[in-house]
Length: 225
Image (cartoon, rainbow, N blue to C red; front, side):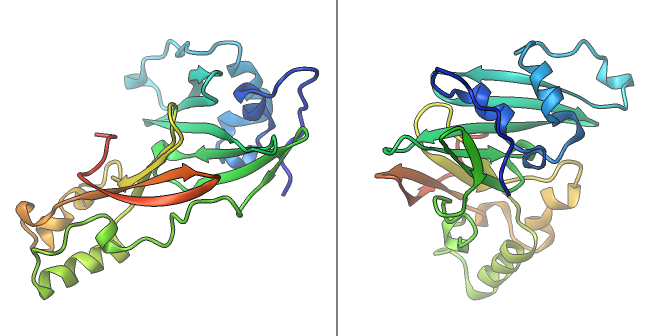
């Protein structure tokens, strides 16, 4: 599906242009229609003056717009705050690879390709974020077979992931995420019989090298904490 065509004229395309060219379904939220996004660009960094303790509606605003680094983050509120991230990578042939990160990084990362004033969905340049393994996110060498089996089951059926797009640099981070208001998720390891000392986290860095993604496993839960 082609995205909206809002071609800039006689100047280089920047992150604001990309923000407007994205289709509404890239966000999947009623506060991010094209018309509302145009209004947001007029008040960058200005959070609405709303007392959220007594507010059951929604609002949205652009939290940060870094034109130099091709990065924009937008915040929306509904019962709790969430964030979108948008960034792009310049390709050697003049095109741009665009990424949209939803739901504070806990949703899917969608990719688009900008070329000659048009934006379209892209699958070719996507990092392989769906073909990940238990050992990418947990140290397992100290676990016995039963413990590893329990952790594998949680990994396949319970674990969610968080993605972080780069404001500076070019790498995407992928780490174990969380589920707001889900206390059973927070205690799932303990409830499954795995003690805290048994859970040793890792995270992934997808490095952008020569216009290809290179997966690197690193120790620790990641930089988002």
